[in-house]
Amino acid sequence: MEYTSGGVSDFNLRVALQTLLKEYCEVCKSPKENKFCSFLQTSKVRPRKKARKYLYAVGGYTRLQGGRWSDSRALSCVERFDTFSQYWTTVSSLHQARCGLGVAVLGGMVYAIGGEKDSMIFDCTECYDPVTKQWTTVASMNHPRCGLGVCVCYGAIYALGGWVGAEIGNTIERFDPDENKWEVVGNMAMSRYYFGCCEMQGLIYVIGGISNEGIELRSFEVYDPLSKRWSPLPPMATRRAYLGVAALNDCIYSIGGWNETQDALHTVEKYSFEEEKWVEVASMKVPRAGMCVVAVNGLLYVSGGRSSSHDFLAPGTLDSVEVYNPHSDTWTEIGNMITSRCEGGVAVL
Image 1 (cartoon, helix red, strand yellow):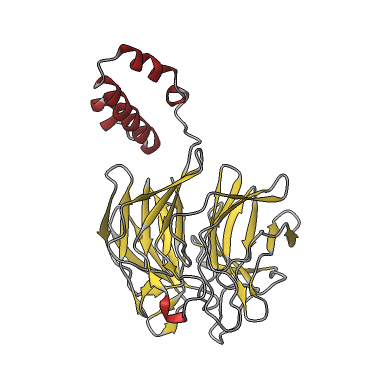
Image 2: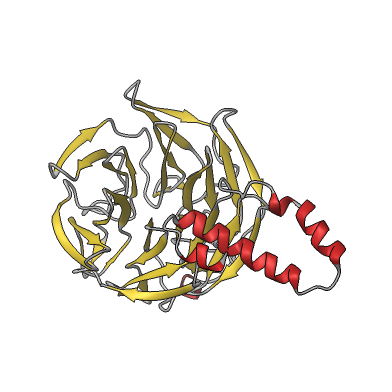
């Protein structure tokens, strides 16, 4: 079985076989035959959980409720959430603690891209292999970025905008994992940072964020990486920066975020491509800005972020997690993360 698992090209199947082999070897160490029989009867030998996905919460910063603005601490720790058991565990940490990073999954690997710590903006990229459970350093971007947008499209990782050095950038970089190389491939229609970004059907969508003038945006744009052209789409009803964005069921969701007038937001908007408009859906139970959002098995998972600030005090970071069911239009709170975090990244494997 060990030889077979090593020769399997499909990543999910390879991980499943290696996990089964490990469990089998642990059982074989026991002299008790009935232990082996009970092992065969457990849920672990039911169809191997291909729908069992893991969420990886990567980096970010943490700050206690009531702490000073300067008390925030960039994180290197990474947590994994089992969507089946709904339990968080820690895995190997990043080499470089960072917040405001971008995270993407490509080829069964998790990539942590850019970010910042103590006002030092990074161009470095790290890659996590869930089989070896180790982070390795790969090629750096051409420009250091934080508050960037990241997504995967046509077998490459795209990094867009963000704080680039001392200014807000509008360049787009693309990472080719085979060549281990980043290259600048174009420009955004509008410079922005801490915006929402996602891919759907070969197109890249950017939503909200903060402009060069420091204004939170409602704008919604789509980028075709083949023609390298941008097109405007209908704007959101609410200005949002530090928002979460995800594509689900041929719709795009814009979740929470922050604006100067309302502080942290709990409202959620959904863009229907069929109707070509935004509609408001059920609000989250907790207002959040800088949280992680991801679509998994037909649901939206929202984790962490920060709360609203009160009396000019620094807002605390959140460890709570909510799940949105689009069919019932309801939110449900589930198990908390081990470490509260804001402006981190999330990946699904």
